[in-house]
Image (tube, rainbow, N blue to C red; front, side, top):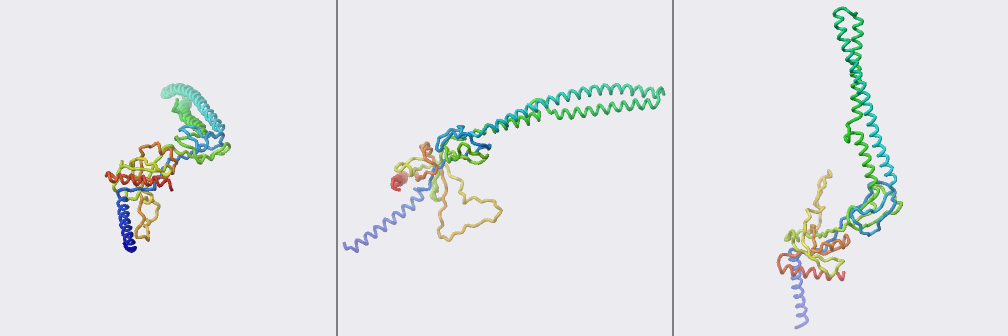
Length: 353
């Protein structure tokens, strides 16, 4: 075989190999999809104080594991204790004020009873005066005096009844439904709540991160002071849209992590996300904008799926943002064998890069 024939043979073999690889990658992209665009995400909770004050003591360190409800740092409680004491005094004052109103109501009721008795007496005199006037036994002047006294007594009773109504309104309802006591109780409860907020605690189990608090730091209400990275985690993978055509919930998957080269873990698709940010239209009052691209073949859109591992505790040991490669497995035996070999090769390549 001449050198030219050998060269031609090598070219043909290379072309055949290229065509076979091209066909394999096209088929694999549909039936054996794999993506390196996968990450581990841990929920991150920003810890923000709900009251302002000077930090007395920091009880945790960076990267320390904490449990839900565990104290993280303490804010100077003295102002909040004083507020509680003031609220307690206000509540006691409301109780005392209600006692004063009770005494006032009783006094006015006594005045009303006396006024009613006086009115009854004047009514009897008025009736007798009318009878005597008809008999011309008294003068018109005497009758007018009796009538004036009777009308004055009626007006006095009406005035005292109005005072009694006003006093009862000022007193309000009795017992726990009294408005003044409810206001005082509300202020007391708020003061006690603020006092409890002087101890800032963890809302979830996790690890302390980005701790920016020292003794003497002034904590502002609503301003994040540190973060807690939750122990639970989620593995998400972004695939091209066409690569997900032949897969559904509970389809098998294999995963390898950059942090654990040479190891492959089993999992399943737990959910498909409803969409991506590019598919969200904001009602901003502007006209819609169209997509402009000079490329004949545009970039493929990726969709996100969530993977549940057979060893879920593994994710909690990996840091948030850890990279992974996800291989989806078809239903066929041959396809599963090819997909397993593909992800195994990728896991070994992680030793290199």
